[in-house]
Length: 401
Ligand SMILES: Cc1cc2nc3c(=O)[nH]c(=O)nc-3n(C[C@H](O)[C@H](O)[C@H](O)COP(=O)(O)OP(=O)(O)OC[C@H]3O[C@@H](n4cnc5c(N)ncnc54)[C@H](O)[C@@H]3O)c2cc1C
Image (cartoon, rainbow, N blue to C red):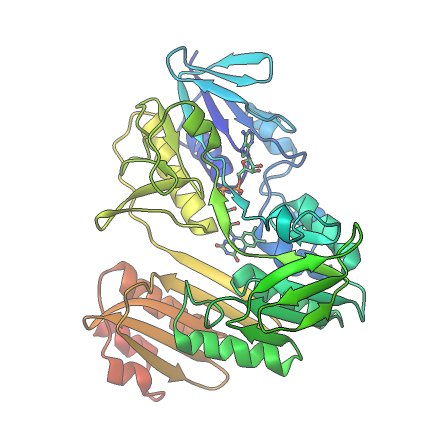
């Protein structure tokens, strides 16, 4: 009987095993994860779960009974330490398992602050795992001072939760503006104003020089010359794709584990999906860090593990919750040359164009705008910028062109 092994029991790993069974695969499936929990969703860790508005069970991607019901061997607390592609085996310490097909869904790890600038002091946290969220949560006491390093989505969401819980929040972003890597100036401006209106001390173009304290962090020196007293620090300065095992196994790497359009690595019996994997897109090896990518790419990989011929076409979407604002993003705004703002009754959206073609949207409390733009983008259509900007234009009309 064939044995398929999936390394990494996260969003992509779950998608792979669900799709394998959904496609009728009746061989052995082993899903191996090094965390104690069964596969869970990470987005709530910096949103509802951190706020205390979501119970643990609701984080899990499937009920515990699912794995036994589907005859999937779920190994938790099990770190894969090596892969031998020639022997077609993986090792968990001394234990060796043979596979027929293997998928790597090892995700990514947060970038850490160097120890030399205080990264190892107690009270300095990153935000990736359930264990991270559970460790940070008790620090969220009303009146405590938190420094958040990094103005990406995770840092901003943590700032929103901290502010809502009555903490004194300072957020520093070394780049000229928050969200610089992922969004337009217009979107950065919106979220800067939102956080400032909630009392967050948001400093752009300001970096961290060093954290100090006697065992536990007490102060932070910043590049603007100030020293802050801090009770704890959250570091959200990006991630590093989980390529370690692939590298040890001699697989090709390029901006992550290099895969082809089928999700196959340089070894045809080993596939990769999710945060750890890059795939060819418009002449580069692209890597996306999102739930949507993990699910869709995982499904493609599972089908190709079964010998089908399915190509991965990314349909990027993402969301972020901050205060009472829901941001929904479709498409990729990279390379845009025009941003059109559409404002309605409590809604707002930023429509990104490149050479006259609609390529992405940031929809702020605007689910209809998001749906329409997403459909247009995914079907390769565009929308007249003047009509988009005019709040009296019926969005349905945009669909008709
Ligand atoms: C706080 C937070 C908020 C986020 N918010 C959003 C959001 O709002 N919207 C969105 O689209 N995306 C969001 N993301 C990103 C999204 O969660 C990730 O892109 C997604 O989880 C990627 O799935 P994955 O399966 O590739 O990786 P993961 O979900 O990270 O799973 C990988 C798993 O593999 C395990 N692993 C690694 N190496 C080994 C090994 N050697 N042996 C065994 N197991 C191993 C890891 O421990 C991990 O459990 C957020 C992420 C975080 C951390």
